[in-house]
Amino acid sequence: MPSTIQAINVRNQFRGKVREIIRGSVVSEVDVETPFGIVTSVITTRSIDELELRVGSEVVALVKSTEVSLAKL
Image 1: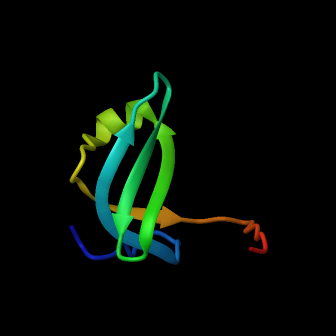
Image 2: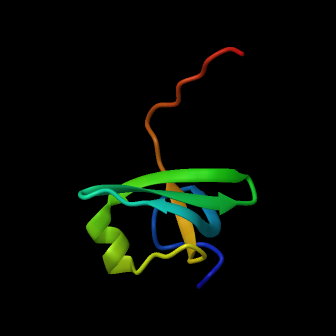
């Protein structure tokens, strides 16, 4: 797997390994351990099966957002 995916227009790419999968009947949560911390993705359970994702799988988390909310601590 290349270190980054260059054929897609997403600037925030985080390479990591699947740390945990919480399966649901339709959607599931996938926690990815990256050098910058944990990134959680909610994707369809069918996609998890089609991608053959397992704990320890190497993945690239592609983050794209049009809104970022902040809360003062």
